[in-house]
Image (cartoon, rainbow over all chains, first blue to last red; front, side, top):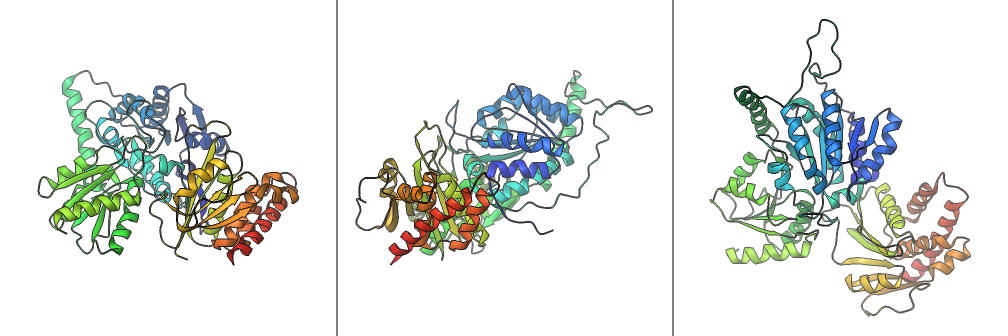
Length: 356
Length: 183
């Protein structure tokens, strides 16, 4: 069935895509700029026989995800930066207990209460600091509303495949803007849920899901088992887009999410003036597309990280480039959005310094 | 048509977000790429609201633009804020019902529309936004008028009364002003 294009806000499109991916359980607590997700869920989930519940706090919401995930149903929450921070303990429990769920973070300005304008200040939070202990989350970062839609189905599949929470990381721009979207056909994939705690039937063994292992030898074995999964994720789940990279441009911008599309506009302008510039856009923030980026290091003379932060993902770029090429950074923060003009000026200035 | 972008601004409640969505929807129906980006943030009742609509044949990069090709302004604060950010030789559509000054720049194409009075004469003072949208479309031809009327009808379908009709009529009055100004 050919799907019609619909004009939708990023937040509403994310919610609808989740429902179409089979997510009929939502628990959350309001925070701008993602409130249309719970609002949409509260309206739509009763129509599909699902459960919408506004929790008393983010801490409660993530623990509700724990319970629903343990019961083997598709479940999600959404929040924004400080709200997500409150969920980090529960999210770590879910990794430990190997419970699937999808957590959407529509980032706003920080630190602290910050503001409600677009930001990318949570890259480190989601790829490094989300939850305690040895753990990882797959983190997907959409650049368009359509990509966010496509990512929701993928996020639920990845969460189920690895039995690990999966994060979709957007910013206030992608949450608030409207773009045309089409919804993909529901995935045909099915997942084993024999592990779920759905009530022991006669003759069945009891399914126990936990993150508490008081014997250190047992916990070490458990963490090693988790890291076998993370190793597979690092091999199989690196995603990126290389844009305008075919002519081996000397200057490569690294940017993700909304910033990447602003960078694309800047690159079009720069190329129209004869400056060869390309874009490396991680789609998975974790696992960082190490292998993809590595193929471009030799041919590039300068990497320029651009983010709505003081420089977070750029540290992953530096890790891969490993001193072989200069990696510079320019960003806006506090809810300020970089403009095309600013990026064009930054690239020109730095190219000139290179003698390009 | 390569790309069209416009900022639409006025008081919260004047329906700027709504006409931006209608324009975006009509352009989408014509197979274009579109983005609609609202201002959002803490704003008091009666404060200003604006949205930026971009229409393009190619995929759209930045959904925010520093200088827009056009500005549709419905109140005093909005003309003060957005007249300076219109690109050189761009378009400014001014609601003279609520803005008592002329454009300050002389490089712009300026269309003066008594949107509130025109809307009232069509039986719906609240449809002043549609008059402004019509004027913008008349000058720019950003979409076909029929596609846009269809988008208006779709927006008001199922609503009480004849809101769709009133809004389409208001749109057509604005369109006439815009087409006349197009020259």
